[in-house]
Each structure stands twice: as C-alpha cells, then as structure tokens.
Amino acid sequence: MDSKKMRRELEARLAGEERLITFDREKDQLRFESKKNGKGITVSIPGILAKWDIEKEKAIDEIVYYVEEGLRAMDDSIQLTDHEKKIFPVIRSASFPTEAEEGIPFLIDEHTAETKIYYAYDMGKTYRLIDTRILEKEGWDASRIREIALFNVRSLSTSLKEDQVAGNSFYFLNTNDGYDASRILNKGFLNEIEKQITGRMVLAVPHQDVLIIADIRNDRGYDVIAQMAMSFFASGRVPVTALSFYYEDGELEPIFILGKNK
Image (tube, rainbow, N blue to C red; front, side, top):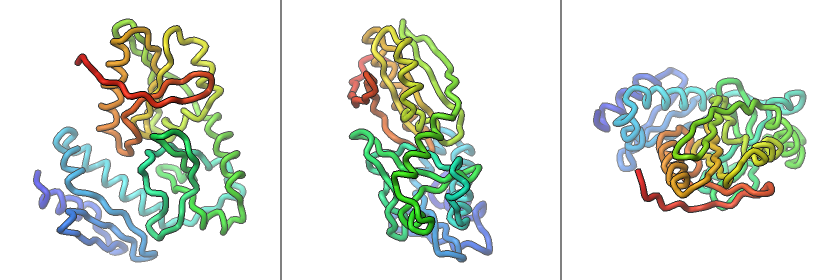
C-alpha cells in the first residue's frame, strides 16, 4: 500500500453527495468537509500508512469510522439542558488543539504537564467536544459543566483485568466507551485501589480507550509499564501520552522511565 492507493481507498469509502473531498499534495493530507456547514476533518495519509503496516485493514476501518462519526457529530446540534447525563470529561494530550477549526475555544482545564481535561457531549457512537459557543448558546457557565462531568465520570463502570509480570501487578480498564482514560479523574476509585497497592502505584493513560494501573514492586515493573505505555500509545486511535504517573494522596506526578530490558 502506497500513499496514492491509500488516498483512493479513503476517497472511495468516504465519498458522498453531501461531502467535499480535497487533497493537499504538499502535506499529503485529505480533508473531508460537510457541504451543509463547511466543517470538516483532515487526516494525514502517512500516519494512516504507518498504522496500516501493522494493522492492515483495521487501520482503514478505524479512520473511516473516525471521519464518519466526526462529521456526523459536527452536523448535529446539541442541547445541554435536560441532557446532563451526556456530559463527560475526556483526557487529551497537552499538545491537543485548544480550539475548533472555526477558531472557537474548547472548554479546557489543566491536569498534568502531559495532559489536559476537555469536556464532551456524548452522542452514542461518538461525542462532541464542548466549546465556548455551546456554553453561550445554552446560557451555561464552565463550572456547571465541570461539576456535572466529574459527577458523571464517577458513575462509569470500573471493572479491571489483572495481569502479573515479574512480581508486579498490572490492572487494565478498557471498556471502549470513549472514557476509559477519563476514569483517572475518579479519585474515589483511585483511592480505593491505592489502599490495595503494596508497592508503588503508577498510572498510565497512553490513549483515550485505556487506563493502566500498576502495583510496582521492583525495578522490572518500571520497565514493563514503560513498554506497555509506549505500545498502547503507538496503537491508540486518540493517543494521549506515553509517560506514566506516580499516584499518591490524590496527586499525579509524571515520571520518565528509561527502559533497560525487553
């Protein structure tokens, strides 16, 4: 698969009378835009090719899904009032865009040096990030969004899968509901886990669809969590950060782990 074939494949699968598709040859990017409202999504073909080398058709399926649902979300108007249960926080990397393509700022809060908190309106298969225009239209203030979102994230399931490696315990939260990484904001849940940790508690949110909690009891454990975080970060549809965090007394501290073993 080369760039030209990938471009043709995406254009064929995402074509539609209601869409305008343009290609930026210099940047090797495709843009899919709604003729209805002028909003669109731009994707980088080299990035998709890199994932295709590993995941083959799954990489294409994921980007088609991302564009389809993203454009649908942009077309739909949202109503916050009487739909409070649809408001959730989402974790993004510190380098994630701070505004929508039209230049409207998203509602954002600081989290760590590596991550920020955005807020989303759940639309079923996808969600829309809440921006200041939505707040103004609804007559809401930011504090109301924050309060509701943090309340709602505490209502999400927190079932974990456990794995043991070299005397260390690793727990994975991966429901694929779009808010797995958001569980890192559920301090009640994290504090309960902390009581069970016998070593050092380390967290990772390499992409939006996973939260890793580690009970690190020896040096080998640090190597393992570093490798896990990097692997998940490279494969995630919405990467967040490959760094891990110490968790102690409700506080997160980013750590850089130099892996030695494979």
